[in-house]
Length: 324
Image (cartoon, rainbow, N blue to C red):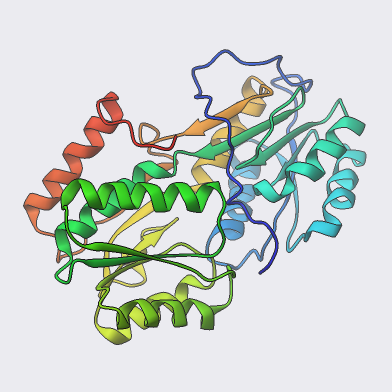
């Protein structure tokens, strides 16, 4: 797809512990009415589907009233968000940084409504943002790739250059270099999040260059990349979910950026105490949102131990991966 995606991740690096700006206007503890505008399909197997699935949990555990719109493209964003605010939803979510401009416009018109932009750019009085510390899990996968690769060439496939993808590439390369001085990280930009054929073509091209481990970071297009990896007998990493459950023969590990964990945490916070007009960053110390998945059988115990030690160093602050 050609629209700017979630990967316009927050440029702000405020952590959860920083002093908050004034609290949003919705009173904490009141009934939670939440609506979310999704950029993709509720069956995309990734970004949009994960957010959609949170709504059911919110209805059950938070007694929230919920609504959603899927495949909300840029020309529709302002009207969709405005409609939810007019209908009395007290928390309106734009799911992805591409909603930031539209949320800014709508939030100014509805100052009594709280807004949340996942991977947003600009928190303000009634707008919160939330994102992941993308480069942390990317570093771990890069380190693991360097330890496992037999050819010394590994690849990462991304759709477009935004903060999410740029941070992921940088973290992956840094982890790889920390494990070995030689070798190469091959980066491919497809320009499309959902085209399965393009995802497969990108992986085929990398594998033809000698890459033996591929990390696809798109949405629906990821399935094409993984299919190519399987056909060529190579190995891969997953993203968002524990890919070993669907691709057990090729998965080494997965970077689980758990959209469901992040969003439910934000919804629970909104209900209990209200949200602040600030950025909430989720990192490796918050396993409900950021964690690794299952190690594949081809990862030796000593490498598992190395990765585990790196995680502990990240949690303690001894290993600060850039960019934040």
